[in-house]
Image (cartoon, rainbow, N blue to C red; front, side, top):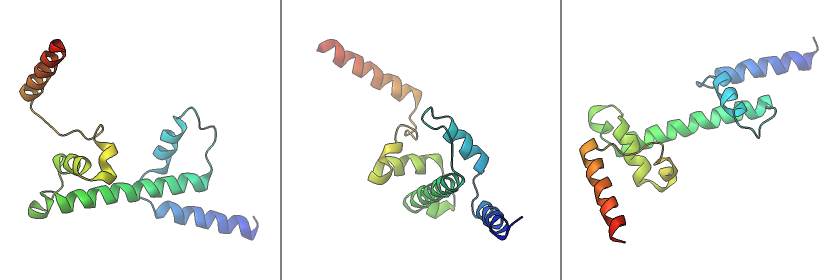
Length: 119
């Protein structure tokens, strides 16, 4: 094995230690797109690391703006509130909807149907 190949293998194993998310799972998600035919190892690593940093940023923002400061914990409602209130995370509101009671949802659904019927 040449010096360059050994150096590349050392870099790859060091890169894998620098991420917490499973690279194989990220590869599987990336391959699920019909537009992706092959995935470069560097692109896979960078996508994995960027995803990890994004999740960390979301969690930290949610913790700092939510009830986590008091209880030293992070809840789903903290994440949903951050997605709703912070413009940077607003695209997540469909994925992290604010929890509501079923009875409240049914009432709002009835109101929407009544408004549609009036038009």
